[in-house]
Amino acid sequence: MNNPSSDEKLVNFLKQNCPNCPEATPDLELKLLATIERHEQTENQQIYRKKIGSIVSKNRSIFPGLSQWSFPGAIAGMLILFGSGYRLLFPAQFHPDEGAHLEAFLVNNWEDVLHDSRAENMSDSSQIDWLNFQIPADSEQPTNN
Amino acid sequence: MLGVSANVLIDNCSDSDLVAECLKGDRTSFRHLYQRYQHKVRSTLYQLCGPSLLDDLMQEVFLRVWKGLPKLKHQDNFSTWLYRITWNVASDQRQAFAKQHSFDAKLKSQAQINLVVVKEHTSELMQLHYQDLVQRGLEQLSFEHRSVLVLHDLEDIPQKEVAQILGLPAGTVKSRVFYARNAVRQFLQKEGVSEL
Image 1 (cartoon, rainbow over the protein chains, first blue to last red):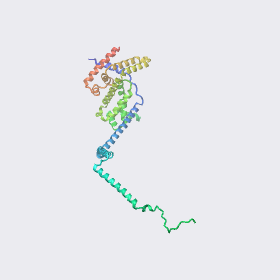
Image 2: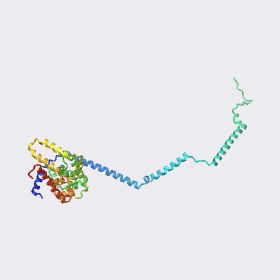
Image 3: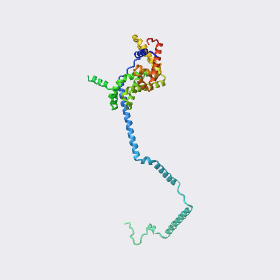
Image 4: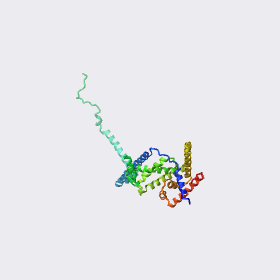
């Protein structure tokens, strides 16, 4: 155990010969206040952002429509798009009977058209008669006078 | 005259009064707290961390104080709390210095520069020599022992309060003070200081 007076001597020696603390720069106090000011501003901005964020999240919880239905809606849209695209790329195939019926219909239809046109050519020439300038006998002849 | 009376009024204000004003957003009160404690905080930081970055460390301490004021439960214990923050900042800085592996070298080189610059003043030579010895004596202690010695013996903080600042049992502080004093005494005696 040390002598108390010895401790006292030591402590006094340390205090007397303690290295001098360098002086602070003159504007340290102002710098500190400026730092605090900046910190306050940053903190206020963060608080403001948090408030905005909480308001937005509250609104989302009140009107959940968009966020809630966007995913199923997207899936449904993709299915519709896929189905219609498939239809466009691969048209429905005819049944063989339907094909035969269609072929017969086309042949008949075509033949009818051909027969009709021949008959018309044979019987009805009135439509092109007007193209022939048939001059009646009693009409006035043009004169060169 | 008005300025003097204002200063007297501020001096009469307790720490807890100033803290209460700070909590209302009054920065003038914070300036008074700063002015009241800046020398103690600066001296403690200097003894624990050396001269480099001292202004930055001061700013860090008082910025932490400003941020932490709303969480301060016992406003009467402001000074204890302030020293606790100071010690935390010093401790963080010590760890950063330890990573750089250059702290001790910086301290030594700074001390040598100081010695060379002022060596011409022969009347102060002995004083400077003793200052160098004390600095080296403190440096050779571990950070834990140095903290106890600086707070208790150089800053005159009672052991009970040191225990609160460092979050240690009072018995641990007492034993660390005992160990630190012995170590410094032996170092000084070895360096030729006979008056201890």
